[in-house]
Image 1 (tube, rainbow over the protein chains, first blue to last red):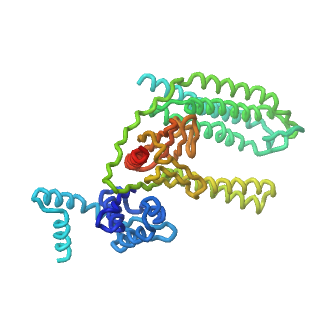
Image 2 (cartoon, rainbow over the protein chains, first blue to last red):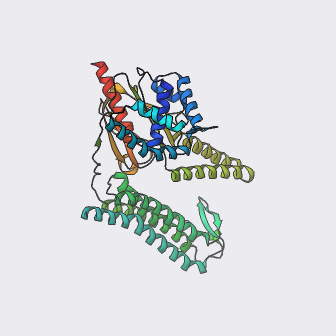
Length: 117
Length: 332
């Protein structure tokens, strides 16, 4: 599992970690049943606080993308397939927004508004 | 292509045809001798003559297993790699061992029965010395001929795929966390073997003698420890370099980022390149091979190579190459 974070970014670190996991689920590299590495291992490797990673995993669990299983840690749920199914639509929307000169934040806000309607 | 065909047919002859012919011939001889044998027959000899006995029908069964199936497993395991175009010492050795072993054991078991033809009781069976005198040289000669007949080519390593380091923004951190795991079938086989050893140990303690029970228990413990240690490895690539930790954490290997000279992705077939699976040490390289397939290969500044099979090797290699570059940049 590839994780990229930028500590100088304004986006919180836990959000970046969760985003990386989400992105790989959407891309199909993380699938239903795949085990996420232990939070401590991620924290050590990225040189961030353990609670930052736990918060990211918590966020993913609340979204339903990850299930916490006793003895197996954090496991990717069947929800990953749903994210992967939306990926092509997201790419198409992003391409159209770029062509129209609409920024990523504006698109995200549009999608959020549409989802909450 | 002609060379592949020749190497394959030689390996097929030594590793498959020879064991099939040798074991079937031995079984045929045993079946012919069957009508004329004491019951039970002697199957084991000590210094004072026969000391182990079994019904005669167990001998052809034993022959099929140890002179047929066992050598065939050895031969076929090499044959698949030879068919893929691989060559190497182990791939030359395995079919030769299969051929020699099947001839030796087939001759020994069949000769053992032939010696007992016409006896009233197996207690009167003479020594197996004469059979050994035939079986051992026969097996050795067939094994050596099979070795000499095998292709002498040296393995041609598949060209390593160059790796483009992951491009990172200033301040950005990238890590790759993954596992090096056996295929589910290989893992299931090891779990089954371990459970069987434990079942055997329990049976031995209940019904057998204490010495045998102790040995079987030790084997079961060893298998359990080995399967926990060597079937799964956690692989971590971060700014510090590459870290590989065995399942139970007993073994940990590192390649520091500053020690990385180059990173590539290679195709690994354990048998041809590293002589097997697990943690392999060969001259100039250390390899963690849990399955055949793609692996990350790191060359250290000393020239030593470190290889680990992982899923998504290209991504792991790209992150590792970037970590190496960053470490070198920091040193300059």
